[in-house]
Image (cartoon, rainbow, N blue to C red):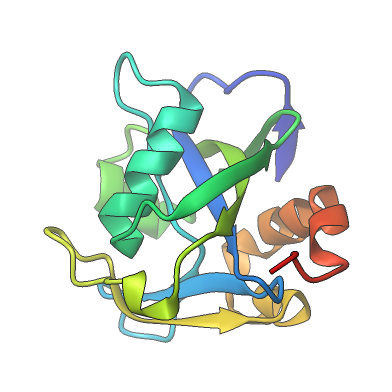
Length: 164
């Protein structure tokens, strides 16, 4: 995992979303396309002409089925990780080495009933809120350093519960 001021060439531009509930638990979804229990926070590509913040809000709606969230902050730079070679060939036919991601912390402003992962192109088979200290152990091994960096950068948002 590498932090840079701008996305690296050869890496797919992407956003990641740390969606927090009022108790500062983090939303994770179990990927539909993985045979094992592969959990992750919402993420997705940045479309041409789209800002990272616009992409984050669009991805939230596309993957979590809601726009009931407020952006609290974004990462200072881009966090970059490499995909394992086997996945790289499968997902992008070798076009990208991995992803350079701009991460956002969002506060979920709705209720659990506002979340609907059965979207037009569902990515998750189920979802849950987890405590920050549980997140790294749920994530596939090649993303663990990235997720730890995200937790470290946004630690101040995980300390106390949000005002009701």
